[in-house]
Length: 88
Image 1: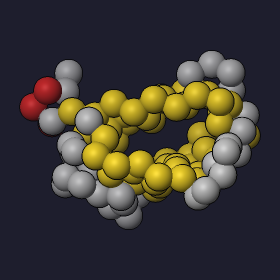
Image 2 (image 1 turned 120 degrees about the vertical axis):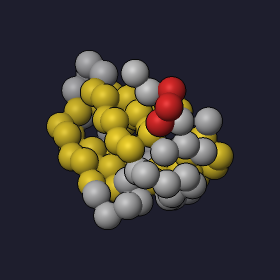
Image 3 (image 1 turned 30 degrees about the horizontal axis):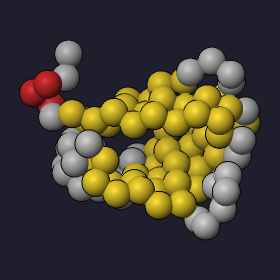
């Protein structure tokens, strides 16, 4: 469950912030260009997007970290998060 999300006040934001309620987070993105995810624990993930779903997974090791997604032309975003004990 995502506890909060907010964008930079744009219809199609370049930056999305959210705070998950769990340590393990999965983000699925589609679009074009590059996306960067700052996991809020000093680590970042970067991938080139496409019309096919691209999945980012990360264990932050702590609850309620601010996660920031930066990217232009995001057409789809999905957040999944769960407790470490629920992860397969």
